[in-house]
Length: 509
Image (tube, rainbow, N blue to C red; front, side, top):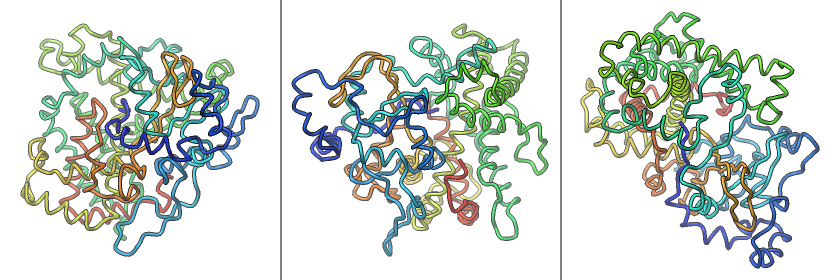
């Protein structure tokens, strides 16, 4: 579900290097020349931060859109020379595993901006003003100075909808003590490893249907027409069986259109909220724009489906709430019914989007490296027979399988950056960041200082050991581990899935 970002263990390793390199000093003569004066005082003001050209009202939006915008967001994950430009058009040496970057044709705005302006710069996209952080030493400094309850970026369109419809806030929106209160209620039943192991049968039930479906829907050329959609169906069925104890039939041959409404609503919601981040959501709401209408309709559908499923489960187990985790959570009195609706709906969204994305990238990376597939198959065969299903216990004996996921998450995490809202004034680098500033923290695991070949998929990579999963990710990790086992036992599926990926992989997002 996102959570606090990662790699903090590795940040200190490159602090000195980032600070001493020309790029680490900001990549410009004026900034280097002013370093001494900055150290004598508290630092430069926010207005002194470098950044791309900014226009009235629009900020840097025209420049970003001209360079491709967010359509190629996953390319922002990759950099060379510490945190510099994106490595593109790469040609792989003979005998060297291929990477997920082969075929990309242009650097992204974010990578270019870090190359031009340094490890920290400021950007305005319409109404959205943010500071972009792209160096391990700054990330470490930020994490050490933030409060015990760090604030994430405020997603105003989501809050605007909840207030408009008088719905509750869930874990994606709540902050501080309210977030901790709701989180603790769910952690006891859904996020602890000892609870996740009880879901083995649930996970495997859906996976068996999913792997059978892969074989059934391939065309005569051995390809799947819509890979991403099929993964969304799998992740939706999995999270619904866990949350509601029921299936929606999305992995059957004939799927009712109504059953796909939640997935469609999630895609619409995700596609529309960005516009209302860079232009005031109040304006969209006041003018009742098409973007606001589509966004509101999407959330209406999401809450309608979630509420119906939750109410059915609460009614079914009302006599013995302690026997059902959802009823047990609600009967504990730690959260209101509105908060229950909101949090479950958000967990369901995360189950559809984040889990599917992570598995898709893992399979994509593995499918491009036959030697990894072979080693993975040998490990799986050494632990389980062909007709055995994986369990949390058996996966403990598959270190290479877990390393494959870690390495995939290092190269291609499910989101390209995490966020922070500065909750108290602090000096970061040479600059004073005031309270309330939004910070975008870029992915740093492909830096040269953390790996000898940072852009190559290396399951034995030492940097994979530095990957720390976000708190609360035990269930989706178990889902993905089990999925890699099921598909890893069927090597031909890697070929099927790989052929189903478009040549420009970023287009599926």
